[in-house]
Structure formats: C-alpha cells, structure tokens
Image (tube, rainbow, N blue to C red; front, side, top):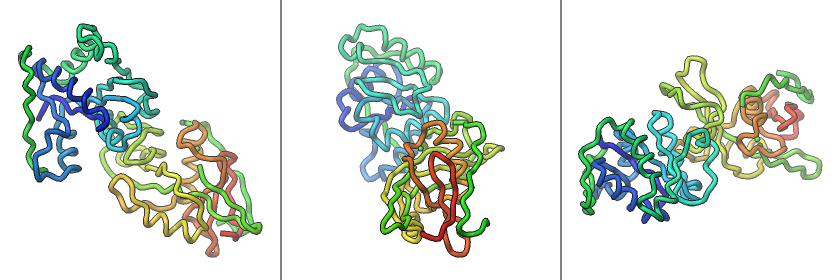
Length: 304
C-alpha cells in the first residue's frame, strides 16, 4: 500500500509533477499515472492504485473539474474519507465536493516558502500515519511499481405530491400536436456496502445519486447526460444502448423512481433537469407514463 494517490488532469501534468516531487521529498510514497507499468490495463491500474492508497489528493483546476476520471477518483477518496482536495488554479469546485474544506496551493506554487503546503502536509500525515523521514534536496523521483491487477387508466393526469425535499430534467418536443420524448435520464442500481460519506446528490459513476437504501446496502444513480429527445419506444432502445461509468445496464426509471428524482434532486436544484417532461419505463395498455419537471404531474395520454 502506497501513501498517496494523486488525481489530476493531463493538462496539469507540470503542476502534478511539482507536487509529487515535493511530497516525495517529505518521505511520502506517491502514486500517479506515470507509475503505471508497461503492459498494465489503464483502468485496472488506476482502480488498484486508488483502492490501495492511504490518502487521495485531487488537484482541482479548470481542467480537472471537467475530467470524468478525476471525478471518479475523487469520489472514491471521498467515499473512504481519505480525500485531500487541493486548488491549483482558478476554478469552481464541482458541486459534489464543495462541502469539503479545500486547500489552496496557488500561493505555494508561486512561492515555495508559503505556509499553505505545510498545512496540506499536516492533513496528509493524519491520514498516512507517520511517513518516512524527509529526504530533502533529493530531486530524484522514484516511480512506484504496481502489480498488474490481476395503473392508473390511460388519459388520466395526476399531480404527485411533493414531500419535503431532501435535496433538475429533459427535452420535450411537440410535433403535429404529438408529445415526443422527453430526454432519457437513465439510472443504474449499484449493489455495494455503502460508505457513509456518499449522500443523495453526490456525483457517482457518471451519474448522480438519487436514492439510498435504508440499510445503506445499495444506491441508485441517474445518468446526467442529455442525449436528446425521443419517443417512448426509441427512448427504451437508447437506454439499453447507453454506456457510462463502465456500465451497460442502464435503463429508463419507473414512474415511482422518476418521482423520487423529482423530490430528492430537482427540488434541490440538482441534476440540471430542464423544465420539461420525462419518460418512465412504466406502461399502461402499452403506453408509457411520463412526468413533468418541476411541477410533478404524471400522465399516460397515449401519445408516446
């Protein structure tokens, strides 16, 4: 097990290199993607390295804030409560990570005597226990070796009650008076032992957590990509073909799950849901149910 995993965007390589060298000189064993052995599978190597780190450092910048990989790596560190977020350039921290206190190393990157780096070291030491003795003035960075990881009736419209929010959604098209889709917002069920740090509204596996089992054993994630407007039949096909987060079992939500998304996400301004209608997988007499965001109406009017 190494001390530190460094998550960063490729465009910030020089900054990551500076920070990795400085941490190595303090006696920490650092790992970042330059350490991937030849022949190893990239995603397996990254997963192995994150899981076996005592501390995950994420370097937030305009580049990393848009990086899918950085979000996944940071989410793993957050879930294990070993995340140390660091601001290295001007950017808005992604929503799911704003509740974490973020260290600002921008002054230190300009002046190596700035005390902000010492404060980061204190946080890292708490997570890594006692590191090795500092090896000051040693500018040689050692690459770490990594083993290969090994029914309601048709034409009925009803308003769904809005319980107190805990914590937005689609493309709506009218053509010749026909209601066409409503953008696909698929979701996947992830069965795993839930980490206490994960909460409704957090980014996870290329989506947003909208429901967590009462016993913490599983969660549900809705996709956050806007992939366009389709009729109900096309939407089901698009859901089956959707690929995100390394998963291929995404699907349309049931109308009950749509309502949960409305309550837990839309009412809190999460998910970037447009003011529109959304398809569910629920059908009556072969016609799909849909829900209006943010008003909450559900209907099955036979125009899908």
